[in-house]
Length: 374
Image 1: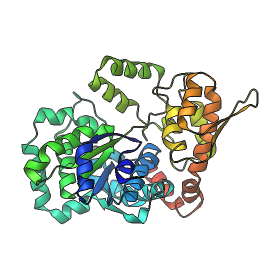
Image 2: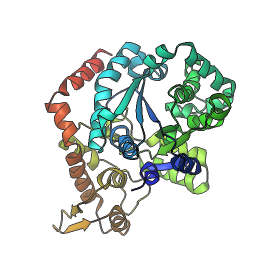
Image 3: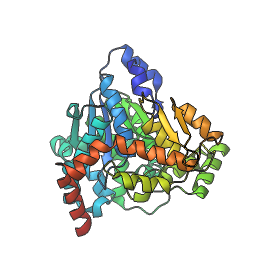
Image 4: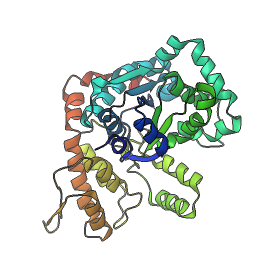
């Protein structure tokens, strides 16, 4: 698999721009990647496995990779009760360790990823970082910043404090302060990255590449929310569609809609059984998404689904075969849920053993103590 394909394959949905990426590769320009995370609760499949799949791909393509632990951004967005010391403790403990284990499960090398804590970068750079924020801010309007608050999980028009308006200029400044030329995030981060593309050449001497991956849908999506999002897409209302997807993405704040990397098999089965999975519907189907982006990712062996009523076994070599059978209602939603749950339990077994039974148990104990004392 060539470097371009490794970098751009699923779950990537958008590259800004493919031409610039090809040119960088053709000219042998060293690609320096980063993805940033707010520090909050437990790491789920979207943050852990899906994001780290791309980190693994980038490594295989010879890209240097950075995971940015955004403690100040988390503080601004009032994560973990808005307590900066707690945020830093989780960042350097559970959160970092969970991402390291996710990279390993995804086929990457956690020892070849640089983890950088935001506050450490800012302290090291001092006045230079402030200068970078000002450069970005002078090229960005207040209305543009307010339209971009969706990257924080906020909605346009929502009441904000002044600190939250600093979030977007800071995120853009992070890209150039880290001197990276491959900014990576979910589709919900594109507004900040577009600003970086617009200000980069004028203020920092280069234009980065922005690359955005798919957002996993939370299993607790309702039929009504699904209908409204699909209507927005079909009508061409991009703003409403994007906001709808952000609203229903897998989130640690909605634990029944998320599978965490250390969930026990019984918990995974319980969550999948309750997931929305309308018969024959393939769009915005969270169970099919888990099959597509997690179960079938680099899969070699066939995927088997058992009909619980008849005992018949259906075997699928590709996700496309599975999707086609489901669309034609040859596959019952409950049978699919059971099969996907079993595969996810197998994939996550190393993380589960490490965090529930092994040395990683101390990190979960720390998280439980934080949750109780908040």
